[in-house]
Image (cartoon, rainbow, N blue to C red):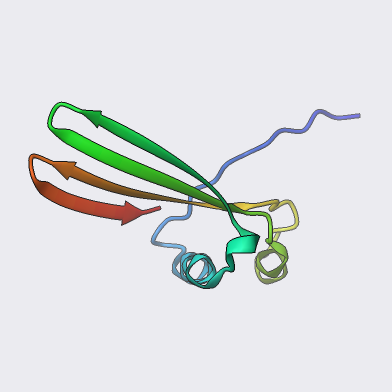
Length: 92
């Protein structure tokens, strides 16, 4: 039996349709479909909060993605930071 591995792939802006589909999924997903974890970090005039959302509801994605049968979950990282009074945020 061959040894398998687990891989993590990041969606890029050039994968526009897939990125848009996953973004919309996280915007509309029910709370029951997601698991969350948060992290708070502070230091050197910086405060950062990160939230990781994970969904194992990937059947819709598998059906619409060529060679996507191995997709087991999708993840989104949201971060908000304040550095010297200036705030910024991003989702990836």
